[in-house]
Image: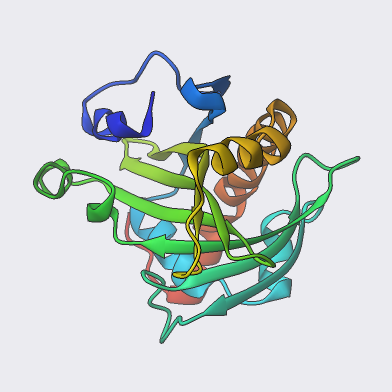
Length: 220
């Protein structure tokens, strides 16, 4: 699915492509992952991103791939509008160390606001950028639906949406294509898919117990 079809995630059921990676038009890539999270609820995912802090908590989330975590403009755990600053490997051995700035946005900036509100679902949405250079290169959503066994997370990463964070700089179409050619590769998509499956699998295992221990909320 192209990013213009993001509202298809609001439809009941599933889409033909729920896990894997594939090339889209203009040398962009789509990475998708489906994680069934037994015993978890959407409210726990919301709490997790509010609670998640520094390096120790980030490594707890993925002990092999996660290296560094900090936040920019997060106040009292309110993560929408803030940026998660991370260093991480993707897919373990042989991976470069990626240094990312993940700017978390209001889901209604990505989805149709009325349909999203009516769906009753929960989502994390963000713009993915390079931490060391003022360049954004992707967009993402974790779309969460509560189920009878817990919840499920349907993740989507659209790689290759190149934009400058420097208001004085605008990339031409040719410059965007060259950046995609050099940096937004099939290897990146493959590694990101592996990483997404692993880190959300880790989270599904630890979150129900952690949430109840920290919040004292035992409701389901």
